[in-house]
Image (cartoon, rainbow, N blue to C red):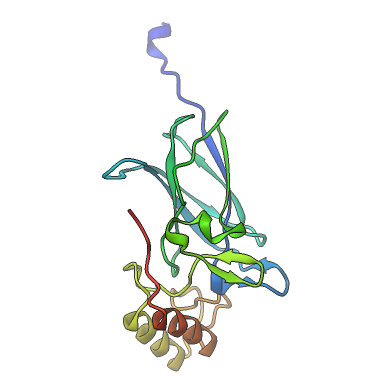
Length: 188
C-alpha cells in the first residue's frame, strides 16, 4: 500500500522585497499594491525556467512566493516580472535553505543583474514603462502611453505606470524619461 503514495517535496518560500518605480511613493515609503510574478531560472545556460509564482505585493513591497519544484541548496536566478515594468534578474544565483529564501532588491543597485535598478531617494526600484513587455522602454511604449493619456484611459491598464488607475502626464513622464535613457532588461 505504501508504494501507491508519492512523497511530495516541501514547498519553498521566497520572501521578496521589491518596489516598482512608478508605484513607489518615496515620501510615504509605501507602494501601490499590485501583482508580481517571479520565475526561478537555472544558473547555467540556457537558464531554463524551473518554477514560477505570482503574488499580490504589500504596500511595503514585500510578498511571499511559494514554489513547488524548487530544491534546497540549488542556486536559481530570481526573475521579477510586472505588467508594465522591465524584467529584472537577481545579481546571482540564490539558494533555498530549510525551504526558505529572502531577497531584497531595494537595498542596492547591485542586487539586480547589471545594476538594473533606479534609485528613488533611498530605495532601489524596478524601472517602470515597458508597457508592451518587449524588454525595452522605447518610443513604442511612449506612444501607447501618450495615446492613452490623450484619451484619458483609466482603470487597470498597462499604460498606468503610476498605479493610480489614470493614464496622464505623470505616466507619460516616467515612460519618456526611461525611453530617453534607453532602459532595457539586462538578462543572461
